[in-house]
Amino acid sequence: MGPRTISIDYQTTRALPEPDVFIHTSNGTRIPAHAGILASVSPVLENFIDRPRKHRSSERIIQIHGVPCDAVTAFVGFLYSSRCTEDEMDKYGMHLLALSHVYMVPQLKQRCIKGLTQRLTTDNVVDVLQLARLCDAPDLYLRCMKLLTNHFKAVEKTEGWKFLVKHDPWLELDILRFMDEHETRKRRSRRHREEQGLYAQLSEAMECLEHICTEGCTDVGPYDVEVKGERRPCGKFATCQGLQVLIRHFATCERRMSGGCLRCKRMWQLFRLHSYICQQPDSCKVPLCRQFQLRMQQEKRRDDTRWMLLARKVASAKVMSSLSLPKRKRDEETRVTINNSGIRSFKLL
Image 1 (cartoon, rainbow, N blue to C red):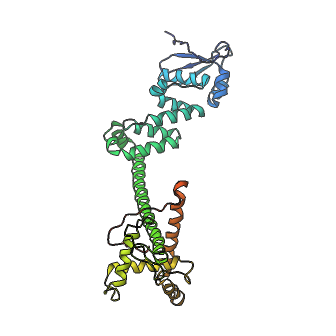
Image 2 (cartoon, rainbow, N blue to C red):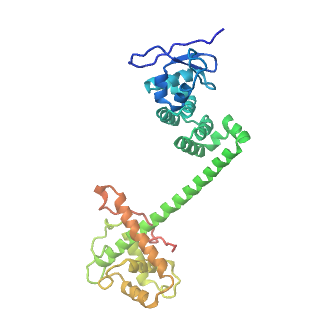
Image 3 (cartoon, rainbow, N blue to C red):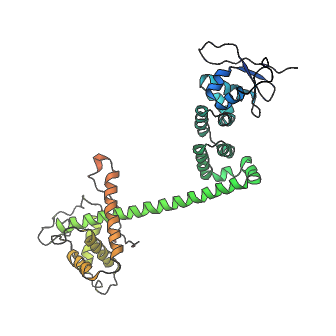
């Protein structure tokens, strides 16, 4: 019994001549096609077509084995119409990706990468990952890696993962290495966000300190400015009330000079940090600003470099915070909730 020839809907409005080439599939089915169209879309098929034949009267035959006949039909249909239905992608997406890679059809390859990305599940991710590696599809490979990393417990129970562990230890090693690097990046990113949050708090504290020492506020202010009689909380800075409490404590604490008070140490750190940021020490009304600046110039202490680095990071955090806000909110200050102990302490990096 000879091979079965099927009819195919070429999905094109062009008037086509009689087919002059036949594609043979794994089950012996023949799909009629046109050499000119196949050669114009795929350089690999063009090479097959241009091979010399033993007899000029013999048929041109291209064998595409290893995938279902219907997948080959869908592949040929795409070569004619540049279209692939969602149903075909559901059923033969992985086969079509393999065919598009082998026969160098980039438009179909991109369509398959997009379609398979949308259809990734914990059940098929290992198979798609292996195919993406073989077919040089880095975007799809990365998406598979991310899904596998985020849902590893579920993937670990699938047959695909169990098969991979037994037969592809190198890929398993790549996956485990990616997961470790992903966790490291998450920890680094989390630490960076925490540091930026701290710098933003210190930046607001610097502005609030200048506000209190220059304009005065509800409880604390300079000698030449009358403190407001009303006792409503300051609406300009969320840190203002706590910082005023800290300043009042610093001014009256009996243990300050002995260095045994943690709250006074925090206030001392804020005064010192301000002195590294302040650009007008001669006219500045913040306590100890001028003294710290003179001390820096005279002593050149070894820890000055760390304080200068911290000052730059605090100033940078203020700029980045301002740029990250929507335009209508750029003039609003970041609100930070603090406890009654005042501004949180910080470490020099």
